[in-house]
Length: 124
Image (cartoon, rainbow, N blue to C red; front, side):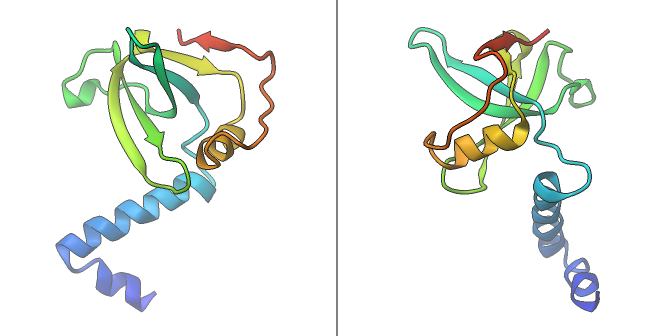
């Protein structure tokens, strides 16, 4: 594609374009990335949790310990979100499909979801 080759020549445009392209592939590509839904403990005292997806289980190449994982936290009513690095002890695996959980998050929690046992399971 001519336009794609032109976009990839400009450093900043290339960075933005390839990032958005990778994000779209994570949702609809052959190798979907959002297939490990988890509940993340954000604030222990208030028992505040957010739902997200483990995007990288081993981030030791970033200088982190094996106790840390990368989790993408999508926002409701859009496909944007934020990447957080959290201790493995602060996440619990959700026994539901990534697609179901993404629909639940994007809808602001109004979409019905099918969770196998109705439980959240602690991440090993």
